[in-house]
Length: 406
Image: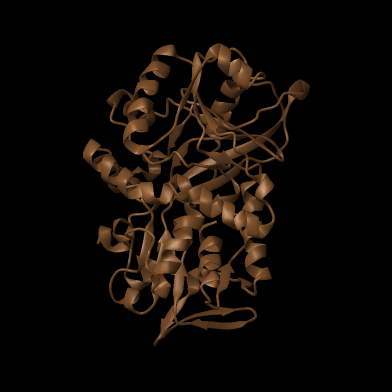
């Protein structure tokens, strides 16, 4: 989503653009999310400050998190920096920086969807944060009211009875829910990414299958050998998500970037049951989302090496909880899908010229979109294209500068 969106934005400004991917478009993380374009997500996904929660996460007691202990030495420095960014003043700084992007995310997607002829896939039903505990619901409703006045995040409060009217096939498990009406969702995020890639090609762009990690700087050009010949360009954009450091590291650049892993699996619905919107079971730590393939169960975060073998224990923990709230039938998928969310410690993307001399040589970064790659792809693509072509940026790009970590 991020790379295709940047390519479209550059193409719209008259640049000759080539997309390079080792697979097809939107077949990695962009394929497997909950399908929510999170117009409400001004406040970041922060490291918990409650040490009881931290202890539960450390001991793998909760379905929403899973830690590979063997990978902890490599992850610990990132986790410590992420914890530091969860201090209230830093959370507010991140929210201020994220707001100009979040406020435009739906509009930028809608423009691309109209151009691609797929605008009907956008569901304007919001999504639900559902609570099993009345105490937890009341606490988060109070926080939501404060966020509404400070950050413009709209929230609607639903009692258990009103929730049943809104989603009649949810079982009577929840004390109530908070609806986030500004968010929109899609029934197949991978298909949306592919539709954008098709639009790029229809407009004259070229899509090449090759390993972009092998790009080299030769003089004033960026070069990549492919099976169909060599590619040369004055500018290159690194939008490889959690694999971005594999391009940057040989150049002496390294971002504090990890790939928070997540899983999904699809199920049939029993008895014709339906969901009109994604539902986040807050205490359960998973999302059920209606998709074209069935009901998608998506997990929280797994902390492990990007290339570690799959360990879908979170699906195993979450599925019984999901069956408590909705009449799930048999699994539609034979295998569990694994994706990787590219996360920087402050939960802001890296947008702009690469740090040091390579930025002056035409190397640009568009990566680190954490849980919001689907949400932010088009809007950060626009910002990057404005910077690359000398157009006045719609917002100050300084908070997203890649060199903030150097």
